[in-house]
Length: 220
Picture 1 (tube, rainbow, N blue to C red):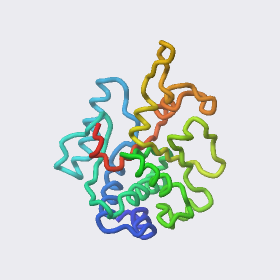
Picture 2 (picture 1 turned 90 degrees about the vertical axis):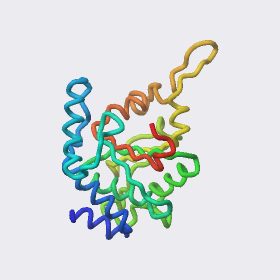
Picture 3 (picture 1 turned 135 degrees about the horizontal axis):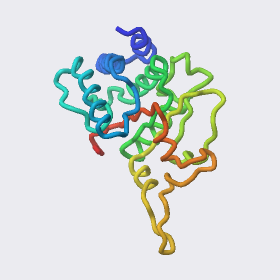
């Protein structure tokens, strides 16, 4: 077992199905390029074909990816610790692969608020990064649907976790009308703090990893 996976398993007290999922993630990310897909259609097709072949060497039953980038899904029973698995994957990818930007999507407001607490409240009993020494004193910077256009950089952490509720994400990314004129979605408007829109900021990141909690509820 990968030493970093074993470290996560012990520190986060992962149950067997979660440890197995994390180990598979580690094996796959060791094979995948972890590069942003090319925009040229021909090069993109070659990229996806090559990445899919890498995954097939480990998971022969795979048929394809849902989108034009490598994507994985785990079927895990409710109450077994899916949020803890997301935390373990984030910590693993940061510590082992140097990935610093993550986007966590929740299916509803209740889970959205829970995820903000799970990932951002160090005093909370279910704080997912408890036991990860690398995050003590410099926990991940949490960006939410409420503060994404107002935040400034952190002097203490270089890892960022964006957390959004799917309904709010759709609303903030929807064109509206005001006085008969079309108004850009709030997410696509220039932010003086970012120097660009939040949408463009996310799109420009070279290492953004998206984690969809209960993805089966809002597939697509």
